[in-house]
Image (cartoon, rainbow over all chains, first blue to last red; front, top):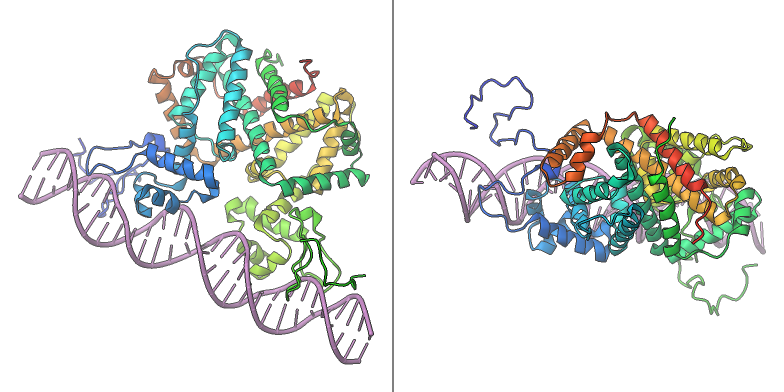
Length: 252
Length: 252
DNA sequence: CACTTCTACGTACGCTGTACCTAGAGAAGG
DNA sequence: CCTTCTCTAGGTACAGCGTACGTAGAAGTG
């Protein structure tokens, strides 16, 4: 089928006539690139194994430790060999995120109570974020929707179907839902990262509150009780988010 | 006063007796470090001018272009001189974020209507995020509270004071409020970043929806109307967030 | 068989953050 | 005054990063 005349090409996207074939329009999205074309030798690795290796590194040593060299070494491959599987490092991150999204255990059928289903889903999401501390920060800055994330999306849409909200509204709802949980997890992570940082922060805040320059902050400090249990705080806020989601749309 | 006997030092935080004085406990938080100690020559730059230079670079060339060398060059200084002002690059980012927080124009008195005040505040925040496209991604991953951010916090607490919520609850409310706006801005940014990316994403999604593997996604696609105006979508979702915030706490 | 197309991977480049060191400026103590 | 001490300025250097490019060989296609 590629035997058409190569001489005339009005489009600038045509393959260059030079030595290297210059794959004409390699999609930016890695999910649109086939993992295997069938020609040539069989690859020694798979996207799955690559993602797993990278995730192991990120879990144990942090996301900064995930470099192309490091992952390649973990696979027993040369550094540049990785680029046969992953055109850019960003795509490696995409693979990692989607692999983590594969950890969701989604019940096959909605329970019938939207609140119950969403609460369950939220807890599962938080558990995943806690299991992989690097995920929250990554997903906040890099939205990427692989096959497993699509499964999650589909599940969310199914669970919220009885709410009476339209498709677009449920998409927005999912964005709010995920966003809240992500940020909660991210906050937990940074707080847990450095005890010294947290101690200094508390000192700085109290000092600021007592300086008189921030009266409402001082008042809030005074009326604030003991630091809340994170799990209870999560449940409380998640409840608010779910309520916000399920409220009937405003008639403006 | 520092003429006490240096021989015995029971505390491990004492300056080491070696040649270098080893600044005993430099705080990790840059806001706890004095900008100037009074000794030695006057610095040629200020935190403010450094932050301004870095912000200009980030605004025009993106956050990735903000490197220590680049900022130093913009200031007409040697690369390593920057480290006299900023112990680590992270702290430069802290300076940038707080400088941007200084752009808030906060009305001196609450209007009396909490919803109105919060809506106004949200719009101002979104405007800032749109003015500085790099801020959203940064603040999502790096919470840092400088003096200007404290002003904002204080304002928020003041505005929400009539809501009847306790101090801690209003802190959580602020986290949700800021988090939502941040994420909205961040989504806008990534969507605006690459038209090609967006086009591919749409193609990928529709293809996925039609594949039959994601029935609810397909259904949502079918019932979804035209892509909503971003400003209207923001207002709609912001309204929901404010409602969630102002709802009385659950009595569980 | 030849031909094409793939994989594997070494080398190399430009860039990053920053540890360390040397000068010299200028305030503080005698 | 001079000495001393602390600060600033900035050069050099290093380890590590992402990745462009080129080459060698394996595997599937005609």
